[in-house]
Length: 360
Image: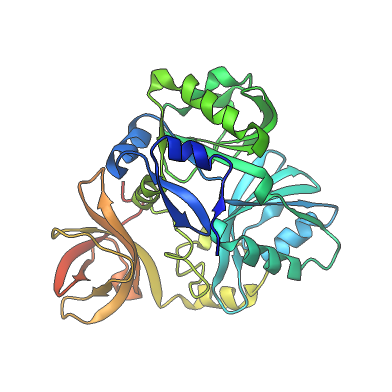
């Protein structure tokens, strides 16, 4: 299957990015090194092109009803200009996808979904659209830039009249940005270092990318690839769909009870409520390595006797901690913070310890 190309594909190649296939798209994984790019975002400011993400517009008097039907969080709590993290539960106890829900107005919402799940999510939501909600998949028309890091406001403020420092976390505005009209400027992010996500029509994407790099020069802004995005989100304990959550993991097992609200009924809510009340048998944990070694997706997690108690879902070398960190599912009795566990790396059992998330 031919890889899809984002609007800035040629620009990333000209910047020397290493391009890799990711979720069906040709995407920049790194420009220099993952560690250098990671530290740029933690300490300064970086710009990610995440235009592979999916965007659906839902409009009409029944839009909220549909969102309430398919998502686990309570979207009725949203007001205009607010966003919410949520998930789409499936009918068998797992998760179709995790997503962001943006309330533009009482009858208009933007859903932002993972690139690998665009078609799957579209079909899933459509299946429950029995009340004629106007659904539009605008994924191919929108470029998405994430400008992340403690210096994001300084780097971007000269490009807009919107006071960026006044946008609260998980809120957004429509504003003119770098000469483009109706840009969604959203104070969300996937790095835990603050910053903004900018939803831009493709025709403005090249111009805005260049203007951001120019405007952020004195803050030493750099383009950042998906490699550093992964290490940044892992240090903060943010789930990655396909690794830490999937069609077989429930929101309660994944520590996402906080986005699972039983103030309404939604897909499989009865069974999920029973699971919540009975208690889960396994939990997603964060851990850091005591012994030297890097945990990787799929490695077994063992107890001191060498018996398998779970598996690693995500793992890396943490640039901030200078040691291996990871996330994984373990049986409930091993899920408490400070519990000693072992990661099976090749033929060795390396000691690790369960930590409360975020890990950094």
